[in-house]
Length: 319
Image (cartoon, rainbow, N blue to C red):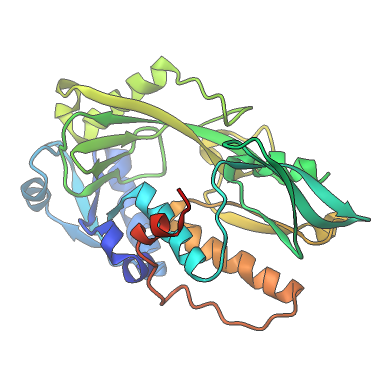
């Protein structure tokens, strides 16, 4: 609901349906409604007939449906809007630039060594505080500073179909599982997702059986899925918080901020975990910690201040 306020031009506010396909789903309904109420999320049970009227391709054998406020965002523009807003507030964005190492002053981190992959130029940048927000690479970056974070890169396969079958975000009314969501995205419908741990976020091989599972599970929500051509299959690693050996599906989607002063390294903070819809809250958490470290008193305003247009990002870039 916060994102609706701060990025209205990036959202398609089409609401969502959680539907019960099996008796197990139906048994989960009361727990789901109680959870929504506890989180102040508006949730309304609607008739099966109404659900089928809203979504004609929905499985006609569903047992129940709950409508919630939901929406779909443009992922690339979403990221650019955050970057453009940062630029407007004085940030310098260096694309294609990799952190290769850290600069220490005793046990204090005082800078980073970088390489611009377009020019091949190496540079050292000084810093009062360094924030590690590298997603599934956060563990690798932290390792360069001699510290560790309990992060497990976890991949998930998604399958995009070659037409748009639904206008609302469709979910199984149950605990998270493989193939339990179909998201409308422009002229496609995207089925997601599986979950498994990977060693290297840069090298993710998509298992064919995961693609098959997406189709099989997706057609439980939309039976026509198997008749529609596949447009794309894709996978990316998520930075989930856990110790190695935990089953990927059981990993929490929450986030955590680590002040590495506890590891004996000052001037270094890692933010990891979470998901796209919690990105703003993650930024608020880490910014509060950085303000404390720098003895800066400032109240976070990002809950209420609209993001700068994503178009402004390109206006600030040197071509």
